[in-house]
Image 1 (cartoon, one colour):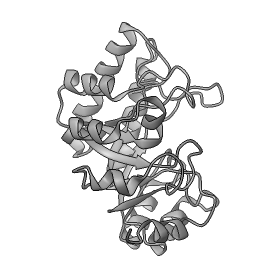
Image 2: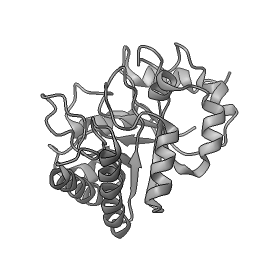
Image 3: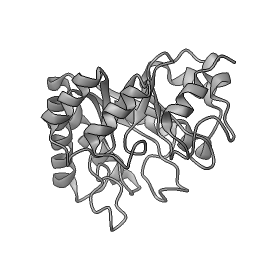
Image 4: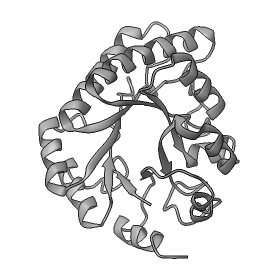
Length: 250
């Protein structure tokens, strides 16, 4: 299994460029980001090249994070800001050598929000296609982010099929989906190649993914997923220690 270090959570005490080097030293196969925009994208690309790691993805900006916003992609009346964030993310990813952009939907509901989100995603896919990038959408649980527009894989699948662009895929985060729906093996197999990335953490505490409700070794032995798996968890110990333990044969 190829494991990616999510540098939004892991090595968070280090500057971003040093996080990449630390992930490489600890044996991660790739890295991914939340909001790396304070780091120059050329410097980020150079750090990835030096470390020999792929950069898998980043998020569009949240909007007013202090005010509780969690993305703008599905928010009626915020289309201009949402598209500016999309354009910024795609330009940054293309320069830094990062393969995917997660368009954050934000807190919204209703038919108008659905329309806004699909239109913004179509815009994102058109730009991503020109840059050779993937666009991701991620269902997020309502316990951590009450009111988030996209909260289940059925809704995500409908949106991907409605937008109907080859660039658009689903980010399947086990932590969020265990809280919202469970039944992972069946769900993953039904989604098939609509999944563009996966992320893992323990449930319910979002710590190292080797405790809690989910047995990831059991799950992955029963699915056909062979892509990268993002370690997006709040570390209680050095990430390299968890990675070594997680990779031990069972």
